[in-house]
Image (cartoon, rainbow, N blue to C red; front, top):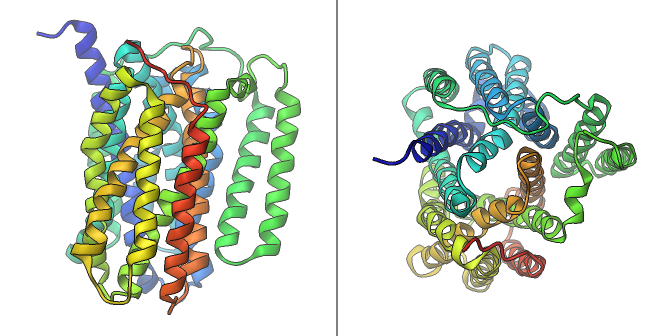
Length: 454
């Protein structure tokens, strides 16, 4: 029988992972429902309908960092449970929405709940495990997220075929309630020495509005509203600069800026944004290429791009175990290089003639292996040297940087190949760009601290 500490650690892991799995499965499945929503809300403009996705993206990115700080100060279990119940109730709101306005409002509430859960869940896991087992736990945590991301599109398509888009949200209700009840009883509060300290509400407002406005600028660029995007970007950066001035030297600031004095933490988070761009653009471009050039149906395309995320699951688990012995940097360098090779291969080899087995499938395994090495190693390296007072904040920063990258990656893919009739050359050029982003990730990871624990 494992010691009590070990039993509690794994209980914390499974409950936290289950909640985040539910969130990621929902967010990726909703993407698959977009065409169904377009058919249901026929009198709604495409710009308005896009906010069923954009409202989630903007708010989630805006709130991750202050939510991580809130978890450190108010208690990670407490914030985790609040986020989970809000996400569950918001899912019910989405399921029973009768118009586009209530649906967008429900998606916004989902984003707030998810932003509270995400950094708190990882902080709970990190606090539950001893330092020499954290890397393995982070690897398995990333694997559960990869499984949800892999299953989401196929799950969404399957639900739509069996019932309707409403069931993607309805299924969250019993699952969310069950996880909440188990977590309320099974989780132990993760107490930071600062727990109960006064919240920096002005800082939270500046940081959230600044981050959200930058995310909004990225979303606007997706719709080719370049002038509005530049104005929003300038406003967002101005707010973030104002926050930097406000927080400098201030105790209990909404974000401890001394985090970025650690060179390894700084470069890991820049790398997270860059690789987030590459990963999301790759995933969306794969769908668009399969349907637009090779003529696959949406369902066929969903299955065709699934092997990559699936292979990343066991690799993520292995990466977590190896990180404790080798450090994070070798895994980051190897994984980013494999990803770069896979995208370069596609850029050089794809043609208008479908050749899935010889051209696409091998690079799904190479790229998926790279992704499985990179993502858990980025998460682990970002928090490897953080003390117990900053686990939530550090996790929130890393999640936010990845989310900004994800939003930019989607905008990049839509801008280059999103229009109907995009040429093969555009896809080849975009895969070449993604290969270069993989190489840039390699360069950014060179200063990362090894982080070996034994």
